[in-house]
Amino acid sequence: MSAEPAFAPATFAAATPTSRAAASTASASGYAAGYAAGFNAGSKAAAVAAAEAERRREADEIAHAARRAADAETALTVLAQTAAAARARTAPVIGDALETVVRAAVELAEALLGAELADDDTSARTALTRALTEAGEDDVVRVRLNPEDHAHLRTMLEAQPGTLDIPAGIELVPDPSLARGDAVSELTEGFLDARLGTALARARAALEVRQ
Image (cartoon, rainbow, N blue to C red):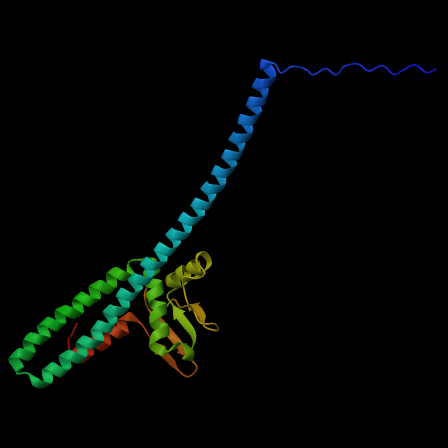
């Protein structure tokens, strides 16, 4: 007759204050680690969003400044046409007074353009915009720019690829003979002189205002 197996009653270690404290510490450490990871991820996302917002703000400022410079050039042309029409129908005395006003307006436009060109990015972007819009993008094959303006445009294209809208196939090349803010568009047939000095000279010639 085989002996019955003996069973010993199970025993469980009672939780001690020390074990409870260790468990509480581990839980707190896990919570802190999770919070830190979440905080770091949130901080990185916020930094990326802030950088993108700053990039857009800078791009908007550059575009606004370029539009102001372009508007000043357009105003010169309109002013010249208006003055010519007014001279044709006014008495000499009135015409002389008009010439004085127009001369001051031309000088003011030159000062405004000079202020715009004091900013490197604005100077470069304005020159490119003028070269493309005056000639018509479809006819332009190459745009020659002042070397400093050319370098700034290249930097902008590398740092902010979406800032400049340059049609495919158009080449930008530096030209030491051009001043800051100047540009010359090489077309499929011929070229377009988009230099600021040329634009102002045309306005002065139309107004018959001597330097």
